Image 1 (cartoon, one colour):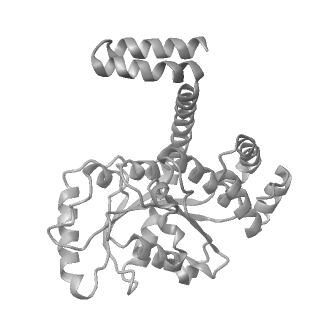
Image 2 (tube, helix red, strand yellow):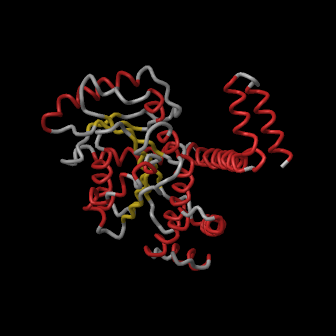
Image 3 (cartoon, rainbow, N blue to C red):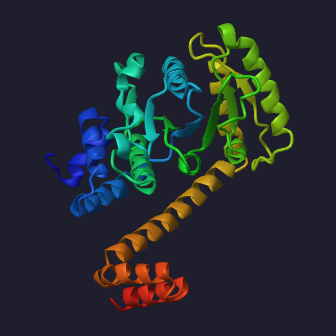
Length: 327
């Protein structure tokens, strides 16, 4: 990929040049040291233009219809004159060489519009790597004038927490199957949510979706929500018919208004940035530790000794840390 000077990237992004936006994001996704340095220069210059978007995280168990929900929500936002960026946090993409968002045909109705920017997560990354690059991509797109950022979690494990920690509003898309609606949804994820949507509430699933919504509302009665000024709503929706989409969007705007009025949104973003800084320090220390020559030399032998019971794990860890500190 041809490289440009930092000013060219910055001006291209600020002018909303889609070609230069894409190239800046490709630079962000690079693992080359010189590219990472230039990325930080670009982000630093763009930072004053960032932070004005509504950042929305979307999660849900397999089969809940996150993709169709995102498309329906995106089309609705376009009618409301919003400019939308759609990103993914997908650590599983390293197994397949691409993320779910790599199949852009599933959002065909969105792709032709210049007010929509869809970007899959980079393949071959750890969860931490995907999260870091998604955060930086989000900042670039905000600087380019996109006022609504949708971040989809399509991976497994901790990806839901990672997405919640980089967004303002966290939407949980649930299955319509009565009796099964709590399956695949961890209690912690429900407690992170700012709204829950029972999707596919149409046709043969309409009655079961209503039952699922009732069960979810009952479950929420005994759960703690970290935002006392917000009563977590449960919506019935159909991405196919458009049922509930406008209500969901109005709920997001109301949430933004309430949380800005009481200072929670601003405080949350400050906390997210501080946590991001701490995470980056931990990741860099881990990277340096793993690549340290003396650590690499000692590690195989110490692993064998710990495995055989010839040395304690505490002693082995102490020896590795001493070797790392000396180096």
